[in-house]
Length: 297
Image (cartoon, rainbow, N blue to C red; front, side, top):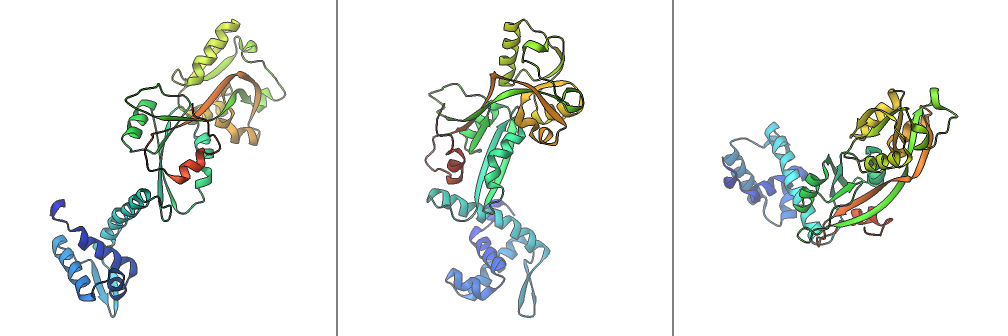
């Protein structure tokens, strides 16, 4: 059977009967007769070549095929309800939020940002990571609702985007507590010749740090450069080297006392942005997340 032979009206009737578990109640909800609903479902079964329900006394039970078809029907009609809700400006029911984040962004920061949604049973989250340009392309095609980044995007009249500043934080120098507890170093002045781990060249912070070291005439001994913040966190925790990074990346290790802050620099800042498209249909919960940072960059 081809997709163009699938009758979604029949599938909808099946979905309501399966959800309600009762033919009569489904017919009442659909404002039609019980025999009409039965006929629609039989036609769907004939098309699929499989029984969807089995009778046990007065009860209707889903067959294995019925369970499988129900799972797909839930996605099809659930997304349909979500679409109508978005178009009509309603927030009732399930809201799907699709968030992209650049690969160099701290996963701790991303989790902190979406934390208000984690306890909301009406929200379904889709989280993706990748390169900024690829994420922006998906955003423009409406495959993502927002992109979290630590850099802005160039102005392009052919691709209008809203770039909202969410906040910033100074960069810290951290090291294992077993070696560096009680020590304070100036960043970058005291780093000459010390073993150090840095964010990779694609990270917005790296250019700032290299320029600062060049101005101060300081040459740390680079031991690793890491684009992925999750890996940078592991190396900071396990290598024994000093690491330059945003504190949010290692917030758990700092709280636990595994790592200590050895120094920081207000001259080095990681800035966080939420990038969206100026589309008409807004997502209320996304607006609420960005409401605490109303300034647009």
